[in-house]
Structure formats: structure tokens, C-alpha cells
Amino acid sequence: MEQAWSWFPHDQTVDFTWRMQTHEATMHRVDAELAAGLPISPIDPEVAADGIDHAINVMWAWAPADVERRVTATIELKATDTDQSWLVKTVRWSGQVWGQSFDNQVGCEQVDVGQPDATVAGTAEDLDLLVWTRAERSVVRSGDQHALSELQAMLDDGIK
Image (cartoon, rainbow, N blue to C red; front, side, top):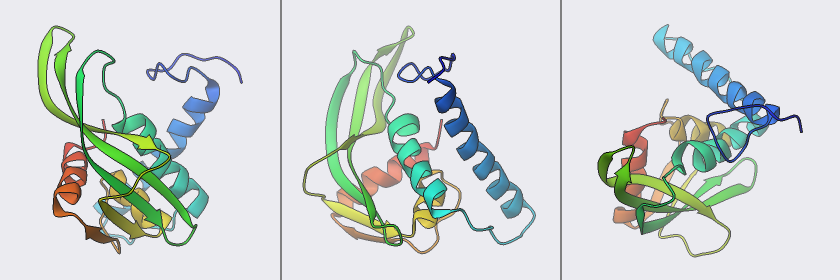
């Protein structure tokens, strides 16, 4: 993989930039359709599944290394059309960053094993739109209400 600078320190490759631009362009298209009052055009399930992974592992997972982290819940995102799932632990973090104090910030980390407290299920496209905070369509939320509220806090915080 060819090296290239990016704002994401864990992946300094051209592939990261291509991946990021794919999801940015997809969401800009969705934004234009929503702004125009048009139906959202289909998102390829493979692109949507990668968009979910990107939102979890890049956009939501960032937190400075030296802050205090507290796991608050475990949530499974389950794509009903691709048989893929993502198990994430929601976290709250606090600490000093860039000379500023941050308290109770939301984030997550993907994990390989564990029992979910709650599940959010839908097509890869619907989950992709959800995690990129564009539209909530046919997703089904079930399980512990505290866990679902932690997911909602991440959604409310948005993609940064």
C-alpha cells in the first residue's frame, strides 16, 4: 500500500483516503437527495457495510490515548441482508486534550466477542444511514434501554 498523509494516525495510506472519500461522497449524495426532497438512491450493500465499519472504527472510535475511559454498554449492529454484524462497546471518556478539559465524551470500540446488551438490526444500507446520522429508516432496536441510549448519544454527537 502506498503511503500518504491523512488526519487518521492509524492509517497513513492511499487506501484510507480512497475509503474515506467513498463514504463522504456517498453521504454527500444522500444529503443532496434529502435536501431536494427526493428518495434516497440505493447504496450498494458492500459499500454500506464498509461505511458502517468505517463509522465505528474511524469516526466514533477516536479518543486520545491518555484519557480515562469507561465502558457503558455493548451493542450489536446486525445487517439483515448481508449477515454481517459489528459488536461495539460504547465508552465515555474524560481528560485533558490540547489544553482543554473534556468530560463524559462518547465513543466506542469494536470488539470480537461478548454478549450484547442491545441490538440494532436492519439492512446494511439502513444501518449505514443510521450511523452516518442521515436517516433512520427500517431499523429495529431491541434490548437494554440504557445501552440503546448510549448508542443514541453517539448518534446525537454526530460524525466528526
